Length: 159
Image (cartoon, rainbow, N blue to C red; front, side):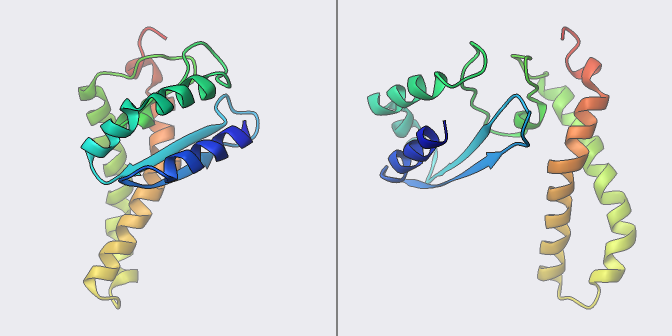
């Protein structure tokens, strides 16, 4: 699997309009080994990349490593936070929006009480940058996984 992912990265890097890919590994024992986050110049370039016969061949090759028959899943936004192993469909967008709103408030409210004092000596652009780094990191690795776990029955009533 590692070699196949590396080879796919090399293939992707040769494509016009491709701007890079981040490979995220999950801890040992998880059901998913890799998440690939690709960047393209724009949606048209991404669509052209995906329309290639070579890309289709890569998806078949990589799908051979998939744990279950559901294969490779593409996520283009917030729904990535709402993807659980063994559950094929994400919740409706309105539920994702409510859960995300709760998460953003859970992170920003305490930070707005604490961080302005700490960041006061720093110029606004830098303090805003640092504030947002903390918010995004907390949402990505702590708050959203926790909210999805807590609200699982509401988000995924048929699972």
